[in-house]
Image (cartoon, rainbow over all chains, first blue to last red; front, side, top):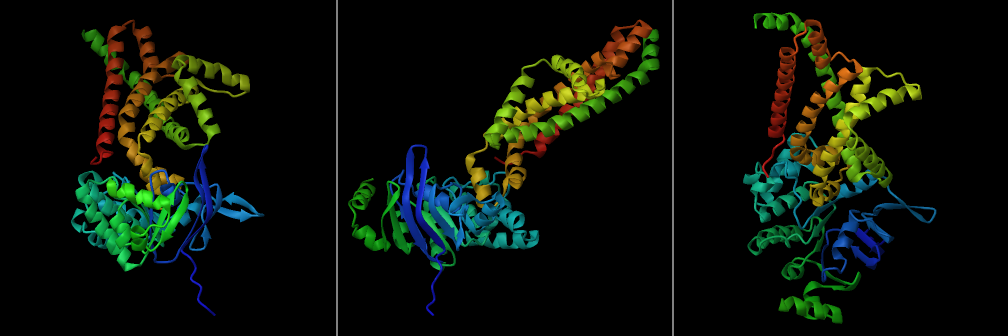
Length: 260
Length: 218
C-alpha cells in the first residue's frame, strides 16, 4: 500500500466576502507537513485574509479549510455548515500559531511571560517546565538575556523575535506568518528573517509565510504562491517563478516590485 | 467651646454608629457597582447585538437620571410589583445600578482602547473568551480603569448620604438626629464632613495604590 501523506493544511475553494467586496474568490491550496510556503501578492490580493482564515481569526463563507485533517471553524451536518463551539475553535487554534505584523506581544508580561503564557494557560504545562523551555526558545531567537524585559523595552526586531518564540512555545503543527517584517525598520528586518530562515531550514514545522520579502520567498520557501484579486494566480518553485513568471499578473507584480 | 466639645464627645459614638452604616453601604455599593460595571463594559464591547442594545439603554437611562430620582423611583416602584424593599436595600440597589452604569462606560472605554491585535494574539494561542478577558484584556484595561473608578467610588461614598432621606441611619441621619436633640448644628455637621473626608482620603489612597499595582512598563 502506498503511503499517502495527509496534507497538513488543505484549502478547498475558499470564499470570503466583506460586505460587497469578495476578497477570496475560491482559493485552493494543499500544504504538506514540514513544507515552507510563501504567499506573495499585491495588497488587497486576499493573502492576509486567507492566512487569518486558516486559524479562523476570520470566518469564511464557502469552501473548506482543514488543518491536520480537522475542519477549521465549521463541521458538516446534513450537508450544511454548522459553526464549531468556541472551545473547539480554541483547541484548533492552539495547534497552529501566528506571528503578526504588529508583533502583538502582551505588554503587561515580560518576554519570558509572553513565551510561557500559552503553554501554562492553554496547554497546562507546569510553570517550571514552561519557564525552562521558554528560556531555551528565547536563546534560540537570541534573546535569552532579555527574558525579564517588557515589550516596551525591546526594539521592534526583538519584539518580533519574542513573538516567534511565543509561537514556537505552543509546539504548533503550523506556523502562520503575517507580513512579520513589514512594520520593522529596514535595519531590523535581517535579524527576524534570520530566525525564520533557521526555522525553515529545520523543516520541523509547516510554515505559511505571507511576505513582501522576495529574498526570503526565493531562498527559504519550498514553494511560492502568488495571489491576486482573491485567487491563486500562479504557484511553483520560488526561484523558477521569480525568474520566469508565467502569468501576466505575476510579471506585472514583479516589475512593480523591482522598480519600487 | 467646652460645651460644644463635650457635646461632640457625648454623641460621637452615635455618629460612629452612623459611620458604620455608611461604610457598609459604601462597600456593598462599590462591590456590586464594580461587578455590574465590568460585566456591562465587557458586554458593551464584545457582547451580541441584543445585549449591547440592552446595556446601552440601561447605561443611558441610569446615567441620565438624578441619583435621588432613581432612588425614590425604586422605593415607590418596587412595592407596586409586590416586592417589599427597605430603605437600606433601596439605597444599595439604586447606587449600585448608578455606579454600575458609570463603571460600564469606564470599562468599555478602556477595553476599546486596547489594540485589536491583542485579542487576535490571545485567540491565536487558543484562549477562549473568559480566560482572554481575565488574563489579557482586563489587566491591560486596568491602568485606564482605576483612576475614574476611584472617582466613582468616592462619589458613591458621598452618595450614600442620600440614604438619610429614606430614614436609613447612616452618618448623615445620625448627625441630623444629634443636631435636633442638642440644638447645636455647625460643629456636628463639621465633624460629619471631616469623617466623610477621612473616608474618601483613604479611598483615594487605595485608588493610588491600585494604580501603582496595575502599572506596567509601557
